[in-house]
Structure formats: C-alpha cells, structure tokens
Image (cartoon, rainbow, N blue to C red):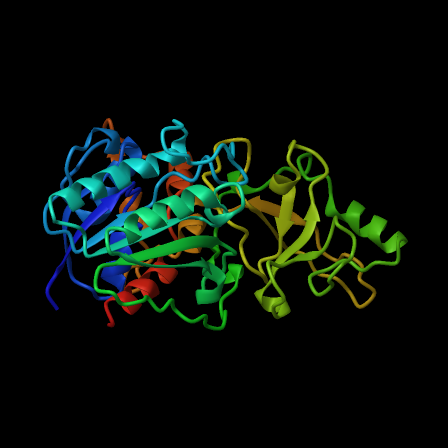
Length: 374
C-alpha cells in the first residue's frame, strides 16, 4: 500500500497517527498543527521529527497533495463541561477555530489541490440544537467542493474499550464513496483490566476525605434499597448509570458519592472496577480524576466486611483507558512519559490532561480501516 500523505490539524499528541499505525496503514507526515508545548513534546516522543506547521491561525497554506487531513478542533465551547458558547464563524470562541481549518481547505480548493479525505472529530454536542446551524453550514460548504459527507457518534465502549466516551466523527471524501462506520463489538474488558497492581499511596483518599460510603449504605437500607455492585439502586446516590440499555457488566457502575470535598457532584462519584470508566477529561486540578473503590466485600446480609478504600486513577491508567497501546500491545505511556519540557519531564498533571484531551484509539483505527478497506 502506498503511504498516505497525512496532515493533522489540532493534532494534540497524535492519536490519529497512532490509529493509522495500529491499523497497519503506512503514512508519511507532511506536518501537524498544535500550539500546546507539552502536546508537541509528547507528539515528537511518540512520532519522531514530524514537521511542525505551527499555530493554525497563522498558517497560510497547507502542504500539497494531502491524502488524509484530520481535524480535532477544540471542544471547549461545545462541551457540557465548557462554556457552551458555540462555534459560529468569527465569534472568537475556542471552538470557532474550526473555521481556520475551513479557511485552509478553501485555499486548497482555489489551488485545485483538495485533500482526498478529511476526518473530523469532536464532542457529540456539536450536532445539538444550539450548534446544528453552524455544523450544517460547514457540511454544506464542503459539499459544494464536491465532498461526500457521512457522520456518526461513536462510543469507545462499543469497541471493547472500557470507557463510556461518545464522540462525533465526520468523514469527507472526494471519491464519491460513502463511509461505512465500524460495527460495534461486545465489550469484554472492564475497568479492572486496566488498573495497576501496585499503586502509590498518594493516589488514595485519606479517611478524612472519604465521607464513608457506609453512610449511603445505611441511608439506602433505611429506604429499603440495596447497596452493592450487583444492585441497580433507584436512589440517585447509588445507581447504575448507563448511556443506553446494556448488560450490567457493560455499565458505568456508580457505587456511591463522596459527601464532601467538591462543589460538583460528578467529581465526587466513586465507580466500581467491574464496569466502565466514565468519560475522561483534562482533569484541570481540583481532584477531578475519576475515583474507583476497592477492598469492598459484603456478606450474604449485605453487611460490609472489609474497609472501603478509594483512590484516583493513575496517569498510566488514564492512558490505558484512552486505549493508548501500539500495534503490538505495548503501552505508549512508557514512551510519552519520557518527553521533556525545558529539560524537565512532563508533569503528572499534564499527562492526565494530554490523555483526556485526546481521542480513543480503537474507534478511529476501525474507522480508518473502513475508509482504506484494510
């Protein structure tokens, strides 16, 4: 197979290139655009000396003869956890930077040198009522350049990755062929399969931090509700959360909520390792890493037999839950963690951020396999 000539806009740490490599699709990088210095450092650690195109707002022309252009523009203004101020062209929001990518595609059209395939990825809120007018404008503009457009929301947990992570994928093609999105597969892995065995005590919450889940158990018991991994509890404090009807072992299993230590309930949730990991974000401080419970055993009367321990996911576990493995199954975290900035290793907090801001590999890998029929 002739190597694909690749350009990545808003590249992050290069999940798109990793997906191509894992799919066995040869490529040559014509360049990538990214402004975060930590992401750039990790990108080079993972991919070598790919050409840097710089800040997208300052790029005048894309390289010539692009086979595949990937665009993962900021979701900050679209995401439910962001400002939700939209992506209208000229608005100056973070998500409106997508129109700089469109500006460069317009220039390619003028030069009669359009990319053969464009793959766009973002949060699913890009297609909600508030943003659909701008999305339709974007689609119409590329349709007028003779692109065929197909799009779909893909959830990582539908592709055997134990993370509930829904993302909007859109594919534009000049060959007049419609893209077949990958079919879902059974989820055979759980969060526990991605957990480290020996974890430093700094990742564990102190007894003072844990406003014990036993209190929730007692309260639910008083209401006549059960409490435990196997129970779907109707009480909002303890229930199985799912994005759709699934088998219980496929679910996002919430075993309790910490009573203190956080303004937002979502960052106080504690999950069972027997289910999926919740959607990972950039975890910008504030003890926002997802928390999992361990060491809990109940007797036949649902009485707690072992002390509860709760800890945050480690950076390595974060990377695992984002499916950052190479084609041989090796962990890319081991390479990425050797990246340096100003002669210092990239910090642990940045490693969380870089993973949470990236793309789950397996859905994109399968999408590339479909596009290139491999």
